[in-house]
Picture: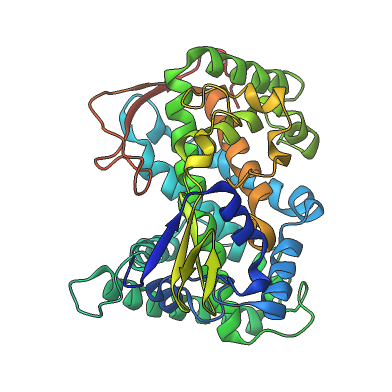
Length: 400
């Protein structure tokens, strides 16, 4: 798999053991292309105490207090502006491209305070190449995604280096991830510029495809299930009715979005945005009677557990209510966001971002699929030719 001898495990108990026992010689085993392009200091490439410190840093950047006081106001302001753009209405748009652009621009604002601008467009064009390069064979020839990804990394490094230099020269205080990383706000030790750059790239990368694809698929599933769309819209219209038109969402509003959270979790489960994770053996080991040589990769394939009838009744049906009926997030085999010490540290931030997007979208717009677009769910969830929708104003939305 991507140049490495790999076994695939679909056994829930084996997968749980691997995810929960990294210290027993089963660290991450991501492909060389990903390590080369994201950098040697990215969180997927480090282990032990370094990973523990880095994960702690990430969690500090996205703690509930930071999300409440700093990140949510930024996300709300961004979504309010982005979704008020008249390019949304009375025309056919590709929601797949729109959600990618939305997530990247929102993340760039949170990470480095960069608003939509020629710089953000340049950054985004290179970032798309970088993403494709990380999931490619590490063949460094001009026509390959790997080659383009490496070139894109160099250009992105230059952009971030200039940002860092500008920050140092200005001595201004900023409320974003870059300021925190540069000034040791969340680290016990001062990061080098190389480490800061790798962290910025990793933060942008880690939520890009998952959040954008979940946002797209949530709209897809809600479009196909009008009763759930109506329930979601009622939840959000109830929030708007308690507020003035210009009032932003606050922490209490987010906490009240119980059905919205269920829609997001069900979307992530049914679409299975992430099929699994890669680990590697640091010594020869035996699992369930199979001997796995040292240095081999183990693809912890978690997709099938999302369709296990003993965990999810009628598993191929989109049913957000299942998340309200049972505490499924605390189940032993809940691997949607990974497991063990590698469980996604940005889970709650992602849910906040998608919830805010859904809030402004469903309270302002209705939409219809144009039709004829196909969806692929393997090896990755995507609409190969885009997912086209026609958007119009929702008549009960408040003017702003």
